[in-house]
Image (tube, rainbow, N blue to C red):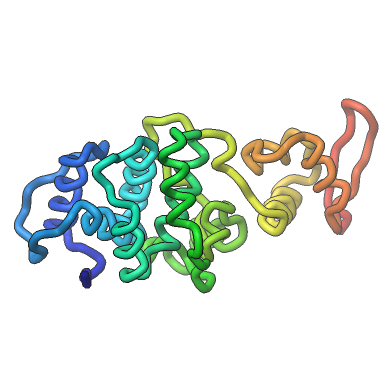
Length: 235
């Protein structure tokens, strides 16, 4: 099935309506569109593709997939995803679904979908949303979340509905991203503490790992002792 992306407003309303019918936390309208006889798997593939233009849709899909859907055929779904070039997008959604500690059947589904999937060439996950030179663009490229970066994508905001609590483990940054965030913190503050660093990286690692980061970082100097310990740039 070939889809024309991004969907226009009318088509997006129809897609949201189709997802709502299947239990997703969204509201849409039954607008006319050009697609006929789409299966449930087709609808979800289209939604995953469209999520790269619609951050809220990405969050809706994470919320939707955290519960089992017995009517979904995993083999057909994977074949449709592969044909649409959307396996890596599904894998990203799966990374954040798994952060919510879903039931075994959900973890099993995404384990199957991720098996044999390859990361995309490095690129922004969201298309056409960030102006060049904007802070959002800078955050996405310098401190992408591991759930995106693992599959070749760059984005810094986890795809969760704002109504829901974010699990701490969704904020996973690799060492390169943490290094960039540490250098940014040093540029923002003349002196900073371990706690300042943990806040910067959203408490995504243990205090012990954070101390290792600070002690190993080039250009970062430790001063003081005990409760008076702080850090600063050497330059």
